[in-house]
Length: 203
Image (cartoon, rainbow, N blue to C red; front, top):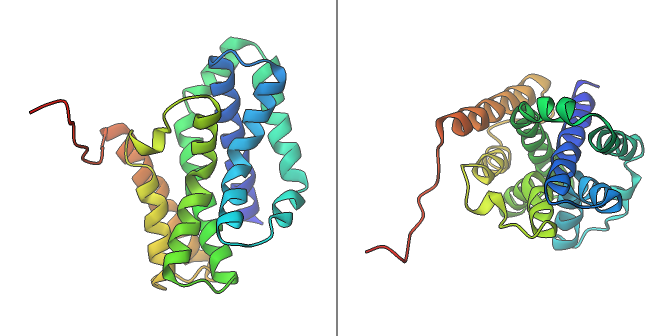
């Protein structure tokens, strides 16, 4: 039940993020809802398509779609000041979403009996696929590919779970991993950690 609450928060956080990006790019109400819906659910769809698994269960999310729609409606219709206030805390909600969805992806791959590589891939795509889709639809460079340390934390979950260092059937181990990755994401954000990149325009 507690993990379901985290999933609800994760869906709401990613829907919020998608709607905020849509509004900042001056999308209309249809575009705002489309971008808001894509952000929390696109990762699972891409994962299933890439792993040749039916995507039908993604559409059977039930109440989670209502959570996303409600969140987007709040962003679109509520006063700008109220929305911007919550946007300042969005990094924490986003970190919850990243950790929860990456765990969800890893658990899904284990259920499908995928090897280590498949578990890592599923964790990464489920954790960051929605954000990448959001940025592409908004005609932005995907943040995950050039800003901060983000996808690495999803990869870490896949690696740890795939190597069976953590048993997702054990509640305490699962939540400990969730808490560690959440904390790492927050620390890396506030510390401004980045992966090394090579600038071809400098000697």
